[in-house]
Image (cartoon, rainbow, N blue to C red; front, side, top):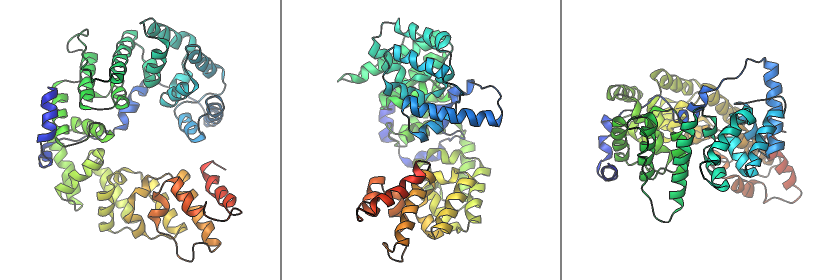
Length: 425
């Protein structure tokens, strides 16, 4: 099968995309599906705010996490005292996990912080350690796949642990090793999933994506015949197996019937796109065709209401297909800031649609504040700089061009302007 797939990747041309299927579900489901089995007790809004504030402070002080990462984690899990999270962290330390590994574990799967360290986590770690792995192997494997500790079935945890261990060991060898699992019941869900993940590994899908699919409940890797057919289609499209887009396309193609796919293509055709353009958009951002007709039309309407012309909307979607999936609130907020507060034109925004993916707090506002400060001092002349050079460059390039080249007396002031919003001041 592997040889057929690898050969098909080179021989099937892009023109054959017309008979493929696509999915409503976004790739993010791969990473979040597993956590849906957990629930939290009902709390009041005041309790939520108190818990979130304490959680952020705890994560920053105890794990050294950046405040933004801590805030993101606090939206998934929160607590009001340190007793339980301390017991979890101390347990990991007792097994030899480094501070860096513990930080990675909590960032990847923060729900572990509210697990019972003694009754839930300790027995699982003891069981895994008893399988003969060294301390360094145990900490490496769990650090790469921490969601494993959230599983309830000890047998499932052990099977996945052994499998991940084999992949890590094989990937470290100088010669590529073909792995197989024959100890599992033929046709079982776990057997199907492991077999399919092995196929993806041989195609070059990296560990991080493999392991995320392995421990998810997403149907794409749980079947057999349909999975094989989907793989042949996706590799035939020319997607790079080492990229996130490959896995996105795999999940998308797996889900829809050909008829549903044609209906979605027709929606875009009705907005002025031709079939070739639709598939090029799919190539850039596979989930775009999976959006519902209502979502697609609503997104277009949002841009039109803000004053963009239909041609500009079409251009934005072609260049940056993910902009069709953004919330109306996000689009309005960023457009109004750039146009009303910075005085860039709608045409400027349309020419650089990637701006909708930039963080307001981390990139847009801090950089724009620096530009406004420089203009108020007459250091940029009377003409506003072009949007793309200001927002698309790396932080260091931006600082070199607009901050660090000025007099030593001015640099601290500009740096304060730049960091104020980014650090939440």
